[in-house]
Amino acid sequence: MSKRDNLFLVGLMGAGKTTVGRLLARHYGCTFYDSDHEIVARTGVKIPVIFEIEGEAGFRKREEAVIAELTALSGIVLATGGGAVLSPTNRENLKKNGVVIYLRGTPEHLYERTRHDRNRPLLQTDNPLEKLRELYRQRDPLYREVADIVVDTGRQGVGGMTRVLCGKLDLLKSGLPLTDPAG
View 1 (tube, rainbow, N blue to C red):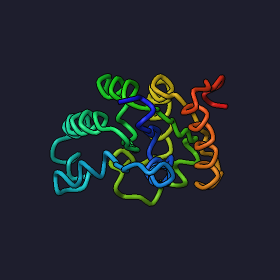
View 2: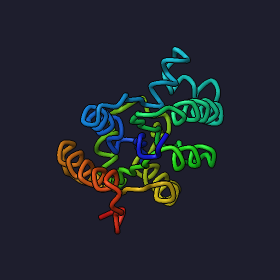
View 3: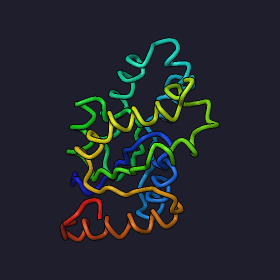
């Protein structure tokens, strides 16, 4: 299996990993997976329930097992949960088994996208924007560590962002290096 056979998306919640991942899978004729959706399908309960019963540590253990299994496949696009990069094992599996795309969004933009979503346990707090800022500070270096390509989500539409990504991926697949992963 070649590293270029798989595309893995990382980034904070609300960055568009699932939406962009589905478009990339359709464009490249790959199978799409979302690690959070896989966990829900396997457990039969929503992620907030897992957090409530098992805590974040229990959820992360399940997430690590699912990501290990999925990154061993070939010809897939995988949207990971926002905290997947917290695990060194996940970072290693992502980095060695596929092209990793970091969808980078500012906490302010991500807050606008996620503020009404009750399925995000980490944002069920008095100040979700501050929580997103804290998560960004903690996770941005880890996303950058694993990323082959960085794309700023900003206010651009999903279609435009996907077109930019496909151009960068086509360069990579042709064997041409990206001089600036964020460029």
